[in-house]
Image 1 (cartoon, rainbow, N blue to C red):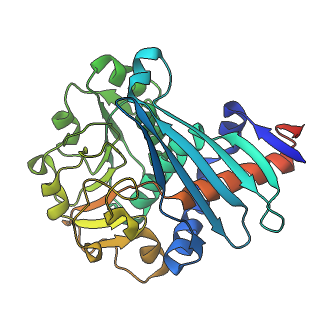
Image 2: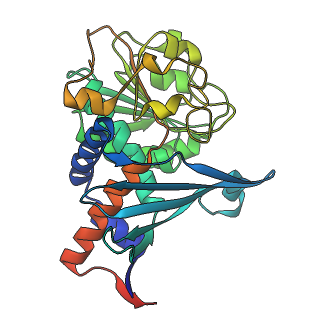
Length: 315
């Protein structure tokens, strides 16, 4: 069999932001229609070190997709990404492996892309000030994706290490580094939490009425999103599976009634309500759904075939 191999650089070149947002939108619609088969992700833990998650998904007319992603926080000290991933695509007619590609870039951009899509759907149309809390991989991906959703005139970046915030802010003329998360968040129209914090990084009283908050951090049994913020806002998720305990769902949502959240796909389909007023706080809490990997990897695979990118390896 011939398998198309795609490395990180190739994957990044093929992940067009606008195409990705369109594919994520279609994927969330399909997920909310019940057209995506995505079993709960499973976790293998290496005690005191890290974990591996397996995330398979299938939708008719797409490839069968599985992502293997690791989360090892100690990698920071080694100069290695905290998240590393591989994605494999299989022919839905024969089960034959079709492609093996870097999943680290896909994970970063599809996660930020879903947060950006929630912003496109839920943030006030006059949103102009963006706050990004966290200057790592996700902070960088959010800075790339969020400007595709609103005409931001000011972007504030905060990090535990100010130099990291400065480095990230340097890539966009609208961005500036600030000393604290509070300074970034107060007065912001959109707030993106992109950390691996095990406890809340913002407070409810910092938030302006009408703000849209996104949170993509995953650090069970804790998390970056304050329960008081969740309780005071209208909550949106990728799938109601987010309310299950980790690894299937989000630590910050475990124990809450699943009916308290609306799926993004339901809003896109007109089956659920989005923002209801200019003063309403909206919150999107990400769990990381396998359908996002599926649509992003399928986009990369088909563009690679069309453009002759990658290497075909005989197994």
